Length: 159
Image (cartoon, rainbow, N blue to C red; front, side, top):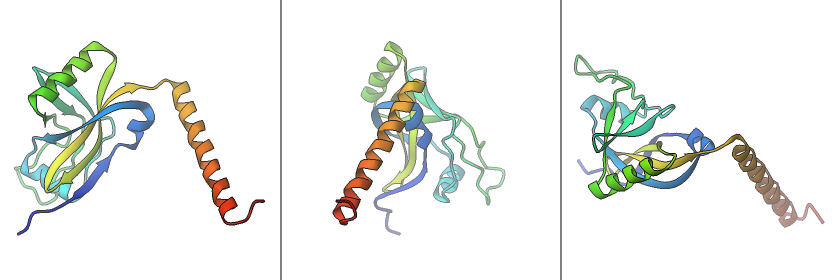
């Protein structure tokens, strides 16, 4: 059977980009059990309230919900278990250094399959204040209004 090609998104965390300013992104593998992979391939996962944290020089993903596999038996997994993130040692050390130096956190942005391998995109993030969120919403609304005006002008509706 030929290997899968491309990228198939399973779950994305839309709220993360609203609540955090993403400074940098990293692609990491995950240490998963067989039933977790099968459940992910069925398109079932949730990143709500998920976060990554350092423990003993390694990075772990907490609170990511992968529901139990429907056809699984006694070998099924625990839905919200802690999963180890697989990164190169240099990347792990760099991330741990950045996490310790300032008020940054690691937030999962997407879970996807890349060429058949389960991956998670994690972002090095800084929390936004309420006024930052309001500014982002106002900027997005202004950009949308500009695009509408340009579209109307292109169609000859505005003079």
